[in-house]
Amino acid sequence: MIDTAGPWASPVTLAEIAGRDEPTLLIGGRDLAVAASTAGLTRAVRLPATGGDARWAVADLRRFFRSAGPIRSLHAWSPTAAAALRWAGLPRGLRRTLHLTATPDARRLRLIRRLARGWDIQTASPRAARRLRGVGVEAAIRDAMPAAGVRPADDGHTQEAREALRRRWGVDDDTPVVAALADPPAAADTMRAAMAVNLVAEAAGRELRLLVHPLQHSRARTQDLLDRYGHPDRLIQDAGLAAPWSVLPGLDAVMLGEDPAALSVRYALAAGVPVVAPDTSDHRRAAGDAGVSYALTAEPKRLADRLLHQAIRF
Image 1 (cartoon, helix red, strand yellow):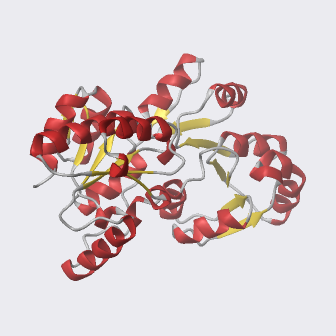
Image 2 (cartoon, rainbow, N blue to C red; image 1 turned 90 degrees about the horizontal axis):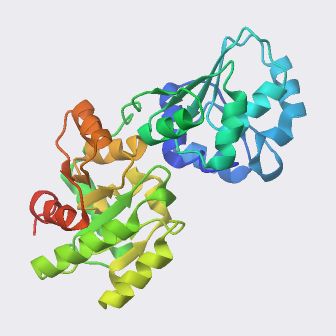
């Protein structure tokens, strides 16, 4: 079960759920149903709730589970979904797992702490696990499922998709486009990425573009930075970045922040798009687990060097 009260119901999370091929209960509006269908999540039933918060649908949940037949286990994909399931008064013997696909803020950390007893908590984010441990809650770090169905497309299809995306972004085929990737997409470290992109453009004497999500937290500050550098058009905004598989054909590289972004980066790896990331223990472990070589470094200047010499082919 998943609701839309927070950053949890992103397309990559919905695709992760779809890969499990289990019956799913969606709590939210029609937009959630459309997003789930786009992500390949078809075995789903939707219940409406005020503000997409499952805690406002407890009575409906009780009625739903009374008619649903025997249930052996429950998987909540947001803290508010877990709280609603607890309040719905379901049998105590059920195995209950709370999956966290984004780092919780302080308010949701308090909610998770109250829910911790009786729930097996799992996350693909080492950063989220550390935050939970800081409030006395243990969470298992699990690997994200492989990107189901992601295969390198044939050259003709890939080129056609690349041309369509670049027309949409207003760039030609020779201009490298780098995406700032994160889980959820609005958490990307675009300031670091913008500094690296500027340094690469200066060193190579070539124009680059940085692709970000429109809801990215520091987007305005990043735009101000690029304005000061005299390159106001260097930033591209595209909501499609929330579903990485939809924009990857148009990209030349992706850049990560401190968190490995396990759910999103797997699509880049499957498509063969180079990944540049800070040199941290979390990224070294993620790269080793994936059996690939990230270009790892510790600061924007070195990040730019890896981007220039290991990721982008000018």
